[in-house]
Image (cartoon, rainbow over all chains, first blue to last red; front, side):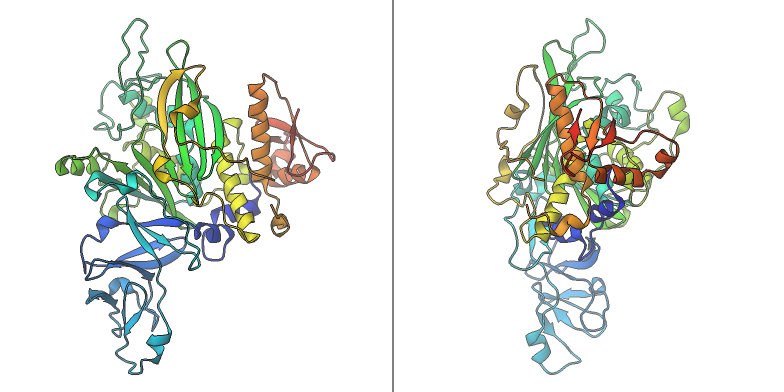
Length: 447
Length: 81
């Protein structure tokens, strides 16, 4: 549980808020590069951390990330014209370069103003199909997190984004919550041929929405039947959690009994401060970014094998997408929860009753807590250790920044290409740390 | 860590994290824990956050354990028992 005051401190992200100040000390994934595909294409409006911005790609292909409203009379630059190496406001024609330089002020002949004042502009980097920005004080940028998946060519990366109407902490905590997988996502496990029941067909889901999660080995629920690769190998819904802080955040292992004697099923998740979870068995990352206090983006970034055919990549990008629920188009990214199918639930065809796969099911429960959940009411259990540590790192970061230090896990000295997750069946006596060779423990947090 | 600035609020996330770590350590050692001793400040904060549970005479609990106020326990160092 958190006190109401602490809950507010951790959840609110606007300028000047404790957590808002912390988050502005990291590189933040802000928009999809696919939304700005070519020079001088239409700009996009971006809302992150409670502020509005305009992103655009200028004539030379450079990205600009500026405060949204024109500094003259406050018209939105998202209405503007992107032309001749800048973005021009429709209202009075003021024009800005990607670095915020005021290039033209048609209704002000004197050059003094534009020589002395710049429009709000922020550093931008392109990686992993995303535009990353730094919103903190100039000169305080940490090293850019060079994740392995983020360095892949654009055509080898699939990005999917769901916007949800709830505070970002509800989504972020869900991204590292291992013990819900065997419950909420029973429908997915059932289509994988495991779990305490089987749907027997894809009639409800329509298709195997997001079965890209790889699971090791395989096991049969029927004695004497050969294990089937790709089957979720455990029915243990109370995993033992082991967690160790790292320079980038933490690794935690959800350790479940495996169906094979003398073995255990281990999923190691890497949480990289403050937005990113690398999930065991998934070749990519789940990134949760606050748009404002009451909405967030959950971004999945997955790397395809090198040389993947573009048509296959496009098909993969579409998988799991139901246009009636959400889609890749900018205007359709907000999750519209389908009606819960109580008939399917009653008929044993679905556990959760939400079609659309894991992310829709996650969205349903995360939004069900309300726009900003009051954690004073919750009753955490020891299996929630990863969530507990996540809050601890955020609280530590707030306190450190207030005391004039950097928040935790900014990546100094970290080789992010070595940050990995894992999912495997290993000997019961083996150490999960061996599954993530880049693992490096850091000191436990101080009081 | 310099805590002067942030002493304005009680950081329950620190209390809960320290308690949870102890619980897992106890489980690793085969020790059964039955309660959690906390400082009166923490106890009062939990009680204030859960007025309905107090009104119903439910035991106040953290991490599945009933909590006991103990003046000898520091704010950020709960003790499993």
